[in-house]
Length: 223
Image (tube, rainbow, N blue to C red; front, side):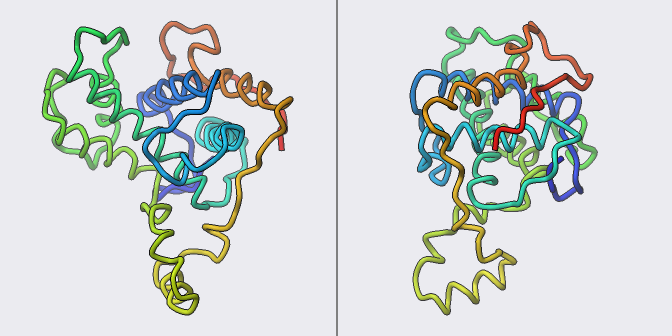
């Protein structure tokens, strides 16, 4: 489970399909080398830390028996990476349609997830090339999981300690929100995290298309 603005929950249906497809591509990128995704708190982590953070977030959002992780900067930045990657793929789909091989299209996946949200009233046509519309739509979907973007505010809070403490109180940020550090697994455990993460994605389960039902995932306690 994950502590979202809509309560402790996991993602289901089309929302789950979108999350898993993005997670799968991120894990593929990290399989052989380190990778940056445009979200500094996550990009600042070492490759092993990124895999650990992705595992914590993926388990929480996909497995109902997983205890909710504490919401810290690196955890929330990891969630943001999954949705940032969705936006990146939508933009690539628009700008380079000749290289698109994903089926269904990323825009179709976003639309399907948006239709599950009763608060989203205007959904773009699946063939729309308006990037602003898609960015707004993905922000809405991300907002169903993330409370805010406090993970981006660390630079503002690193100045005067008294000012920083007051700002944290006003913003409702715990004292260890920015100081909590992602576990950095030793090299001989990195492949364990990769295997576990791939087991949480459609390709890793040997599925050509994501199904709506709850999948079986690895239950190993890796930390």
